[in-house]
Image 1 (cartoon, rainbow, N blue to C red):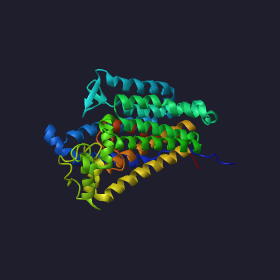
Image 2: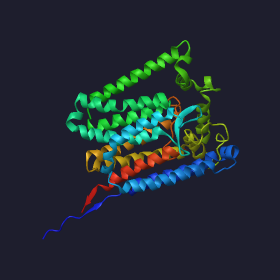
Image 3: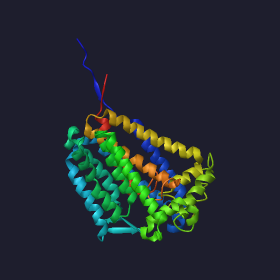
Image 4: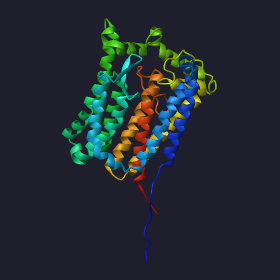
Length: 380
């Protein structure tokens, strides 16, 4: 008599270990980077660490809670997630909006600051996955279906760009949309066309900024482009942060100055614990430390690719692809800015940079990925 094949739930411990490692490493680096500034500004060297630790602990709890909930549960709230994402961004214009460092990107909800762009990234991943599944594999390959998905993310991208002036988050949401579309409808011609249009638009903008009689007409973004092309010529203003970041990376050498031994974090590099933390990693741990962290991100992306390829259905696979696109794009933009490979724009390094909203909602996304992984059945 033939034995019945046993099936058991899959849990990706490798993915969990990588995320927990990045979180712990991030907390260590946040303390190393921020203790000097925290002592001067708040009289407490642990100020930034305690704040980040609190958000991280809540995020880890929510990650495990979301991981235990079947991911199809969230499909019911796809439209709500779409609407809520737009409403929260619009609320930035209300009295609930908070302004920090000349940027109005946060909401004050019962004394807790929340960045709507981070909510929107999670909400749009759920909505886009549901929308693509609703349209279906056949219709998504048509021009109408393709444009419907592509244009569905356009309003939130425009709102985030114009209201919060957070162009990087708008780019990330658009990149998530394109990647999810590519997985659902891998028509290379359309994506090559999108790439050419994007490249031509960027080239035209850069050309206009460089040859403008008065760069002020392009606002601070025009100044950032000029500072990116020649940071030394703008060393006293827009190019200052970039130059200090490059000094930090260069002074670290191969193996770095040692943990806690950075000089640039002592008031020289603005936002060292936020957007520029990778430069301090390179200064203290050297090129070796920087490459090691990049390899950890590559392993994280690889594990998510494995889960997406083995997901039980298209909805689960698309959720994982959306989270993977979010993390990968954010890492590329952050490291690109720190190394002056792209113009300066504020974005955190996933799981490592200081930022409560960022780490909280990214851990919820990881919970969704683990939920999809748990749906995979292993057969004997």
